[in-house]
Figure 1 (cartoon, rainbow, N blue to C red):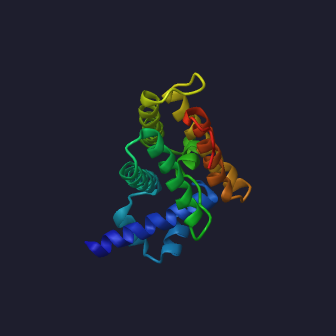
Figure 2: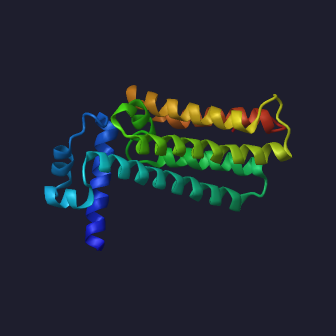
Figure 3: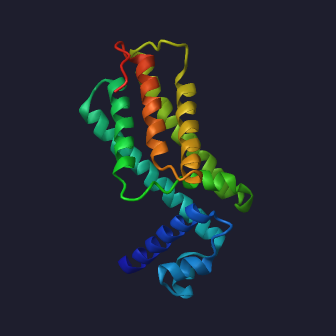
Length: 207
């Protein structure tokens, strides 16, 4: 059982890397099988088809993505009871994670799936939409907690701030890949963090 799960994870990891590099349409099952070093029988034991792989791949990516967010959230809230300070710490942890990667951040699988949405069925596209909505709601809850204790200097709502950071980061993922500027993502996050400080920090000093 453990060996089978390990094989499946290797296939998913290889598929994710190739899809982020080439796009889903340009990624063939033969390339994935060859790069993973498994037999076709082993591949089809875990995935019925390329469509099945697409569904399990985005589900795996979303699970990993939100697990990281939960970890940073717990660490930030353990360091501060103030929702504003916890949000600033959360963004810093995200930036530190990006800066600590041994290789450039490969990109966001959600962006790839949205760009190539005509290749996927309603279940996959619906899952992607729901995941992006959940990501936005994640930030919305954090901004709502901040606004409850600190009045922003501009008239802005928690949903608008959440929409802003999700749009900014998704755009940064795409630009970072297209222009080979991996540092762009953390740079944009730092700029947004500075904007948040200007909105809510009495000192208005962006660190």
